[in-house]
Amino acid sequence: MITTAGERSFRFVNYVLMAAFACMMIFPLLHVLAQSLSSNLAINAGRVTLWPVDFTWSNYAVILKDASVWRAFKVSVFITIFGTLLNLVATASLAYPLSRPEYAGRKYVLLMILVTLIFHAPLIPNYLLIKNLHLLDTVWALMFPAMISAFNLFVMRSFFMNIPAELIDCGRMDGCSELRIVWSVVLPLSKPAMATMGLFYAVSHWNAYSNALFFINDRTLYPLQVRLREIVISDYFGSSNSFDVAGTMSPEGVKMAIIAVSSLPIMMIYPFLQRHFIQGMMVGSIKS
Image (tube, rainbow, N blue to C red; front, side, top):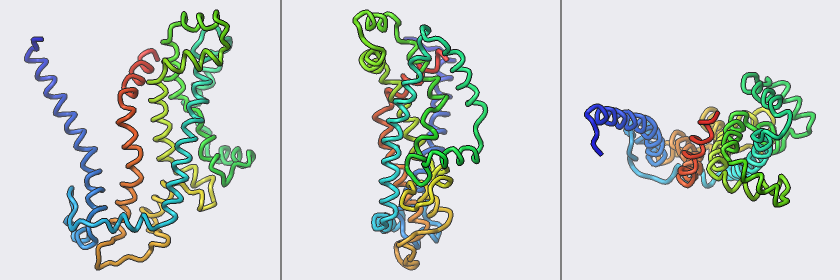
């Protein structure tokens, strides 16, 4: 294939811009990782940039010995797994009937959902709702309020609309119920959309901390991000509140270590969903 000079220049500029954006995202991560693996003296002297200085695992040892970090980690894993499953079931259950023209009243439902994209309920009504549902100080308060994202719903609905109606009609002619059609026909063809929405919801649950601040008073139910906030902002290290200032451990290093630990699970999931992620976003967004 013969390319023109203009196409080569355009491609070169794209590569340069993509490399610049990649560096902007990678360098902060490398700096955090380097500080988490450096000694207290090197961090205080400002000698740590992108590579560890006086390499040590002491900062990570502080985290591994802290029971509150492990407890918060388990809460975050539970919320991410079960919360994402609830999100996918609820979003798919609503997106499917909204994608089929034979269901009456779907335009009015879509209009009501569209309103939620523009107007959001303030904190006090949300708090009173959670309180009246008796969900305060439970992990369900961290999952139920955001069970369906309007944006994700529209993307998934657009993906469902691309499924040929003939396949669904064939299922009905074979005597399948609507639930069986969704389970045996729609969902197997919607793996890219489900993977993309699952990644969106999982990242949202993993990074969320505001709902825990408002709805959770029991410290044993704090997710990892709230524990991270305590350490980074309030310098509250719990049982590990004493540091050997002249040694290898440092408060700053522990902060960077827990930031790295909290970021690692989502970064490990993303490569497995990348091929579905690109297809799901492109197909789901074009028709919208």
